[in-house]
Amino acid sequence: MDTGITPVGQVYCSKHTDKLIEYFCRVCQDLVCPKCMFEVHNGHDLAQLDEVTGIVRQKVSDLRALMDSTRQVNDDNLSFVEHRRDEVTRMKEQQLYYIDYGFEEVIKKL
Image (cartoon, rainbow, N blue to C red; front, side, top):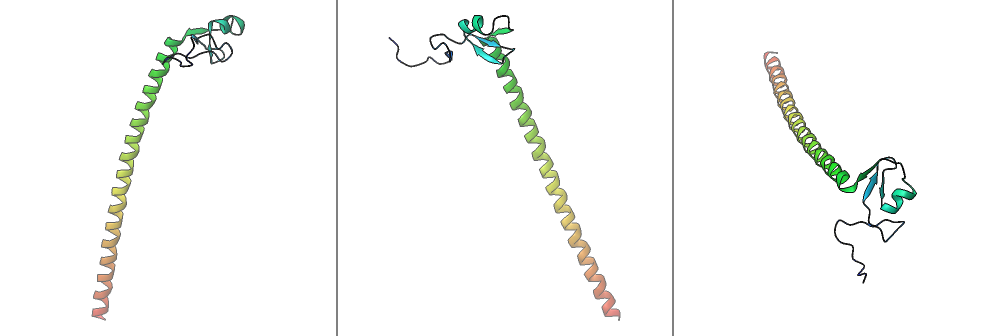
């Protein structure tokens, strides 16, 4: 009796709907059932699906770590730029004060 529910982790072939996907074709970059393996992917470099999913999971994990690291570098750079901007603003205000003070002193002497 088919309940129409696919167990978690099981994927059926789109061409042979009664066959589970068991392989990954490295040549075609396609998911392959045993029937497709002989019909379409005969002689291709095939890998067990669980072997490929482990590799993909590791690559996703590595990519996530790289993204987190990049995000941290970006946050650090933003903090550095904001600090420098605040420092430049403070120095500008200080220089404007000294210019105004200097002109006031010159005007007093005139």
